[in-house]
Amino acid sequence: MRRILHCAIVLTTLLIAAFISPARAAEKVDLLLVLTADVSRSVNGVKFKLQREGYAAAITNTRVLEAIRSGRNQRIAVLFMEWSGYGNQKVVIDWTLIDGPKAAQAFADQLLESPRAFADRTSISGGIDGAVAQFARAPYFAERQTIDVSGDGTNNSGRDVAAARDEALRIGVVINGLVILSETPMPWNPEHTNPPGGLAKYYRDNVTGGPGSFVVEAKDFTSFGEAIVKKMIAEIADATPASGPTTTIR
Image (cartoon, rainbow, N blue to C red; front, side):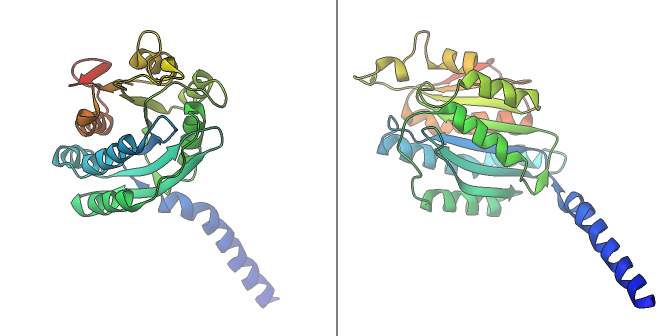
């Protein structure tokens, strides 16, 4: 009888621990940030390399690290995901704690070494849906959850992008955008990378949203790295860039 009682107590303790431990293990950070990068067909080898190198340089940038250190917990958690057509989303680097130069450099090194995930159509909606799903499995806790969408074209695959955006906003996720302007429109579909009113307007109308959300516009690919730095600082500091909801990096 005593043995049965002892086993029951042990079992009860384990069950309680199973429910309590995840909450205790969820280390607090100032921001959960999912970086999502467009690797569709319109993103050629040069654009792909510039995206990867831009994000790697940004995460190790001294201004970005200073922004991280200025937070209450002095750390953020970052996940990097690539997306293209419907159903094509891949986590390239899983949730990683960034709390200083060493962690940031390790993240950057892994990013530069990882192979490209896809080269398909452009499903921004799929990218948003895939990013939202990552927050539920994050081993960290933050009051702010942000998706960073970088891309060079409009949604042409999967469900309506505005619907995906609106669902993310309803659960408190903020979506910011980095618009990569194409110097030469695609000859077979010029409005994909150059829609009426411009790609930044398309992102503002259909992709980004939430308190303080913004679009950063890279004028050309030589300015891409600086655009990422500016956007990440604003995301970490939870502040819109000084020039307003759309900023052009020249």
